Image (cartoon, rainbow, N blue to C red):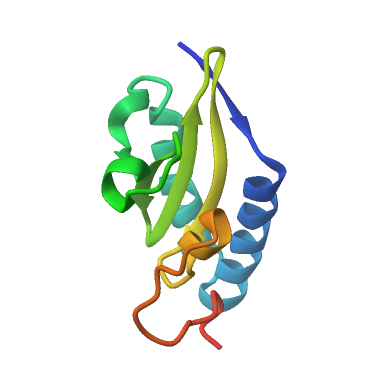
Length: 115
C-alpha cells in the first residue's frame, strides 16, 4: 500500500476549510465534513484508481485524477512511491483556472467563501 503525501497547498486549504466550517456551521459539521474528506482520501491507498481522470474528463494534458467528496474536488497524482494529494477545491471555485490556466466557468465566478 502506498503512502499518502500532501502538498503544502492542500494542507493550507484544509486548514482554511476547518476554520470556515467551524465559524459558519459549528464544530459538529466541521468534524463530519473533515472526517468524510479524510476517509475518502485515505481510501485512495486501497484503490488509487477510484478517481476520475482529469485528462479524460476535461481534455487537459495532466496525470491528475479527481474525487468529489463533501462538495469538494480533491486532486491527486499516482506516483511510483506514493499518492500525492495536489489540492482541494470547493465546488464553487474555478479549479480549472487555478490548476491548468483554463477557465471552467460558464457564469460569473463565485468566491470560495460565497461572497
